[in-house]
Image (cartoon, rainbow, N blue to C red; front, side, top):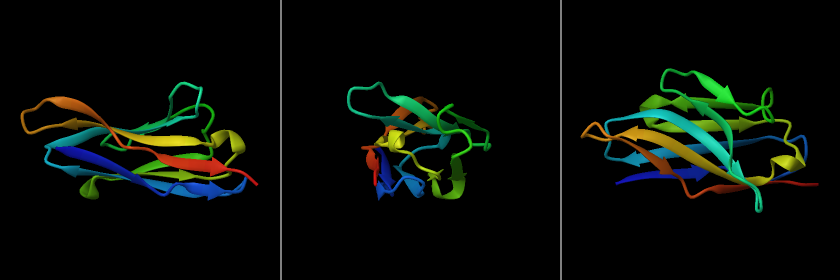
Length: 120
């Protein structure tokens, strides 16, 4: 069984920073793409950014220049550094990972989400 556990959410003032972490644990062969999504009530889930195992990153337009994704492949962890946070960044942030199991099958996993609230 594979689990993704996010941490690092919380309340921050506009202009502040937060760093989210997502740890993948369990039995698997490798992790391909790790991504962060976010969802605000009443809105669709949107891609914040993603990182391949080789370190190639991709970001949503609304966070480019403010958010940075990084990975520690040895620790099966992905990070999301969020700077210059705005009230519109308020959402539940979800970690997603494409994981290859020991049979070679690639499956999609989601974390439980961590709340980020940007407010003065």
